[in-house]
Image (cartoon, rainbow, N blue to C red; front, side, top):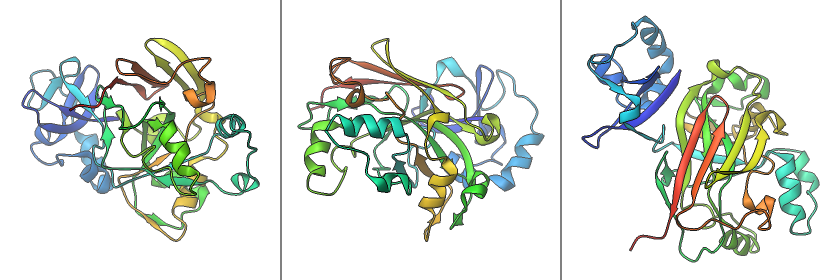
Length: 303
C-alpha cells in the first residue's frame, strides 16, 4: 500500500492511502475506526491491518474520499520519532572523500555509521527549502529511507525485515560550506544538515517492494538529470543498518533509517564542473522506482 499524509482545502492534515487516483482519508472513511495520523497507525499496525483488508474499494463521492490530483501531499511522517542517516553507499564515500584528498578509513568497512538529523525540520513534497543563513554551497542528497514498524532491540540483520514498515524517498539537504567547516572540529554534521530533510511523497509498505531492493534512483535539477544509481548498490543492507542502530538501544515504530547518498547522488560528489551548487529558484526532483518523485523548490531565506 501507498500511505500518505495530505492537506485538504481546510488546511488540516489528514492521513490515509492511495487507491488509484483517489486518496482515502483513513479516519473519516472508516467511520473513526482508524487513527487520524500515520504514526499511530504504524505503532499499532498489527491490530489495524486485518481491519483494513476487510474494507471494500472506495468510490469518488464516498465519505473521506478525495481526488489525488486536487490535494496537496505532505511528508508521510511530518514528525517522525527520530531520523538516523547512515553513510552506506561505497561509491559516494570513495568519491566524496577522494575530492578532499582522503582515503576511505578502514573502520568504514567494519560497521555502518550514522548521525542523527533534525526530526523536527521535516519537509514534504512541494515544500520550499530555504537557503540556511551563511550557506553558499547548498546541495541535495539522493537517498532511500525505511520506517521502523515494530519495537525492537538488538535486532539481528537477518530478522530486521520484520521490523520495517515501509520505505520512502529522502533528501538530506546539505549546506556543504557549513558542514565542512564544523566537521574540522571533530563533531557534526550539525548546522550543515539540521535545517531541512525532505521525505515522501508516499510511504510504501515493504511487502509491495519485496526484500530484494532493486530500484533505480535519479535526481534532476531544473529538469536536467544529474544523478543515477540503484538501491542494490548499497554496501550495507537495511538489515545491517538496523542491527547497528538497535545494538543496545530500543527502536520504536515511526523512527526513520536513511541509507545515505547513492553514488553520484549529490553535487559535492559530481563536482561543480558538472553543476553549480543550488540557488533560489532551482527545482530539485528525486525519483526512486516504486516510490514516486519528491520535488522541492529552493528559496531565499524569508524575512
